[in-house]
Image 1 (cartoon, rainbow, N blue to C red):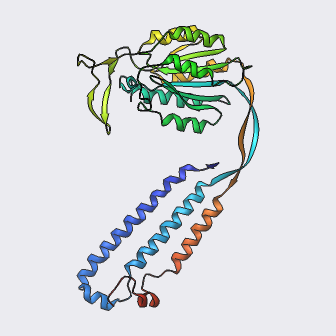
Image 2 (cartoon, rainbow, N blue to C red):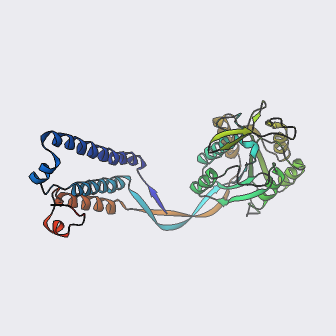
Image 3 (cartoon, rainbow, N blue to C red):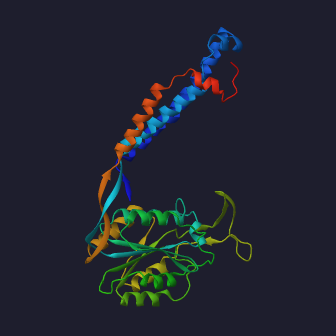
Length: 345
């Protein structure tokens, strides 16, 4: 495992395209000035050893040097030691609705993207809790098992989309059933399931399964994403809206936030319903609820010792600078004899 200490230095990589553009502009300027002085044939006779290839090679050396020197400033580190770390927290499973209704844009940018933003911000504000992710539409699918690796959880989260499931619907019941298998510690009383959905088109009696989950020590928080006014479901190709989803009567389908279902689930499972329109409010509410809960101690494997690796990149950067110094822009005798580029001397 590796990490980067000073990511802000990546912006300095913009120096490289700037150098390339400057090189091209200088070459164009030199050509225009030379044409005013003499024709191309005479210029070749006056400066027969001038080599554009060597100039490009020197440019490549300078760019490579800058690249490695900037990486040295970023200071990549490699984890060299794995330690068992004891921490306290609760197990939180996020069940994210990825049905087609989540494409509705009645909340910016759309329901699915808003859901991912909410989960990401909640994870960013967690302490040492463990998290898991479930995706569901017509069926529920395990996306990420319980883990303390927040970076991995956010990566999996960002890859979720409405094309993951071929079967459509909102199988909240299946998502709750699947969440039960995530909690591997029977002694842990504080088990949290966070359902993010528009609550529409759900299947089965979810109140009953929510009550069963509560009996097993699982509290369910529900977050409603969407608006009561609702919106159409866009059908897109390459980001362009081609049409909107129609019903059997060829009428545009308007999908609305079904808060009643989500409130009922939360009520049956000793949880809380939160409207997801305000991200900060959602994050603060979840954080306050988690802070009031008893924490369970558990062990996890973490990389504890990271070694600096900047010296390797610094060395390569200095090496390329030295190579650039000894490269001349004129043709060398041995290269002229090889005549690799079929040049006329």
